[in-house]
Length: 334
Image (cartoon, rainbow, N blue to C red; front, side):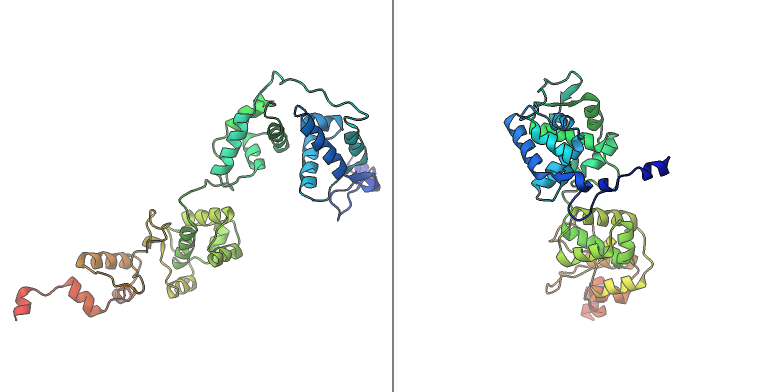
């Protein structure tokens, strides 16, 4: 059966690359028809894209895609008979009847607002992912929302609306947007993972991105939603266990990158905070015995020896001994 269908294909019907989608010799530039349709919809707001598509023998998703391409200045071709039927609407052919809202539809405004809220919450999640999560056809949801945007009075199928409104969470690759997460915090997380012994290749693999994307984040100091999702995913998966790369640890130490334990959840995204176990260059630290003891215990838990910890804190051994074991009055009198 497959062989018979392949043999029945007309070569003239095959798409030709280079000029948008074409249909052999039976295609026409979609721009005139799309301009005509847009004018009809502007003149009569009651007309829906679905009704116009059916009148021209097209699917609503095909008409919507052609409109988007033409309005974006991209080349687009449609079948010549469809283009002729579209251009005839309102002239040689009557326009589809504008019908009142069908009894099986409901107000589309709550659905459009819910979809927008999901996209904001999940950093611009695609409409296709929302539709698949709801168990509906993406082109059907796209067409319904396009009709609502054109004419807010139009309804949406009640079963479609119920399924979309039931979606409260989206699966991966979408991830919730964290308003408090800053680019500074993302860079610190990335540097901390390297200090823990994870290479950029391992981090990118865990976060489902590329090492180049992470390098761009470090270089530009600006993040995209994809980079944010990748770093946060890797952070949750890797920040609690050491990585296998001594080279990554050595390079991070040479650059002064702090490990995960040096940060608190409420400080890592704040540009004016510094990690524990470090000293701000150019500023004198006011050391107390309690503060020094806390920092030494912290750095010891990270695996540093006493000499390494004091070097990290820019303190000499004599100074540390004096702070931790202050001379008594009897010692001073002697």
